[in-house]
Length: 141
Image (cartoon, rainbow, N blue to C red; front, side, top):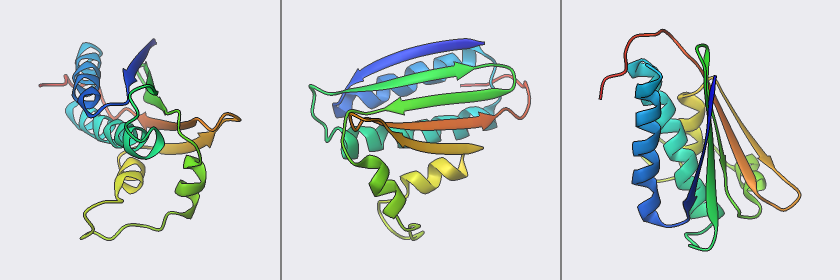
């Protein structure tokens, strides 16, 4: 089991380094292509939502990404410092296939085994993503 803590400022330029680091970790742990692609998409959507909707691109706020990788499962907690995110998720209707936005939560659910949204007493929203690994084929860049 390997656990990683990644912390990023809430600026648009943070997403690419986060994804680069996540891709490197998945490669390092020999995660197969399909699992890596699905996990990266789910984490990317959670990160984007934390950045835009939770922290509202306020550079003084942070997004914490906790990654747990083992032989059976990939887990990520994406934690913002926004307020009211859990209520927004509860009220969200499924998105239309043709809509330009609003598909992030649906994509997270589609690409993972389980997704949970929990808001703490301070209002920080944690999006917990869990993906059961399919096999041990090598992840290729």
